[in-house]
Image (cartoon, rainbow, N blue to C red; front, side, top):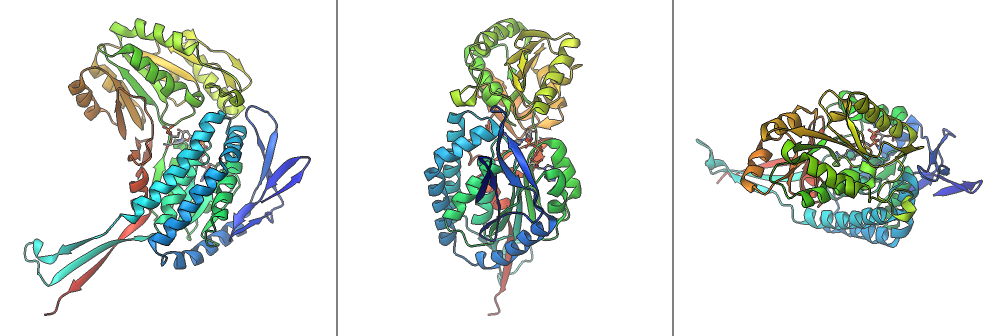
Length: 484
Ligand code: NAP
Ligand code: G3P
């Protein structure tokens, strides 16, 4: 799987059950966001190698589609077992590659094994249906429709950097369980973690050709993959700009896109402020805010804003800041460009009158947890996704104003509402344009069997285990015409 030079491993890509060095002769150096050193290299593969991967996937999928669900579940459960066997190695790799603290990296690894097992079990209990012809006016009893689900063929799974194992397996597991083959394109900064995850799948003995790990910059091979005629469905998770670009390039194949977010935390005047603060801190600052479902703006009723800001300040200043090896909550961002972007949003807000309550301090790509008060809708930070530990507080005078501002966003992933009035919470939830609304809880994707979706600029289609299995299959109708 690897070769070594100057004590740095070069990871091969995975095709037809083999680890291979690319014909391109080119590799991409992966820099650790906190060690600030090269922790490995991955292959920059060629278009011919993409073609070969897709060809072998199409061949392998024909037989795989005929395997029993029990056999497929066997391979997936072995994969989960191998991931658990490799838990520490994979967690350490995630930590070094994307700067996630070790505990969270371990949790991601274990959560992935649980997701895979649940996916296998869920698929075993997904059954078709039959329909009688005479239930339609003029229909005949002699017609009986038998509806089942069949695989789509070859799934292109493209994942982001921030959950390099979990968000990849969340695509690969349902795809395989549904009888498809997979072309897996990890985020480049996450490709080593992805390779370790595929190593576990290889150890599980998955039939050759069913999955390929294709590494290389999305800007170089992304369009070629997306436009490839051998791809039958694309499951993408990443930024909105990338997702929109991909959707324009994709041909007539089904898409599921999980994109960016700007999740509001709406704090009503009757909220339990202590609880709201606990949820907002965890929702906004875990993994330095590098979560699509992070709380990325607080819309607080002006009557409790001062109290809330004071409580938030107190808790933010307790957050651990530093190396992921010390399980810090606030860790260096994925790269300097990300930190520059976040700093730009803070500078813009401050220039336009926002008040720095705490933070606005930076060391290289480490941004200290920052809280800005009196943020207005004139500021970029009110609307743009920082993907960093920066939280704007926007003061509102009513529920109506909170809903209006929440819905003016281009995004619609999740929202949190903090209130003691549950009737009011449901009434607001019904009016908020998002995939999910959390009542008195932080915005988050889990548990992984819940439907997970974004609307507007946050995506299209639905993930979540059952929904992913559905999106990676189609219905096949067989009508029995009873002649006697
Ligand atoms: P990104 O830059 O959009 O990259 C996502 C994936 O797309 C990577 O594998 C990337 O490969 C690939 N890619 C880049 N250009 C492509 C192209 N032209 N065609 C096909 N694929 C291409 O996102 P990220 O920085 O990894 O993740 C952060 C963003 O993802 C944030 O906006 C976050 O909100 C969003 N996100 C959303 C969810 C969700 O579930 N809604 C979850 C996590 C993250 P390279 O790495 O090689 O460029
Ligand atoms: O950004 C990754 C997205 O899937 C969030 O996952 O579980 O941290 O809400 P979670």
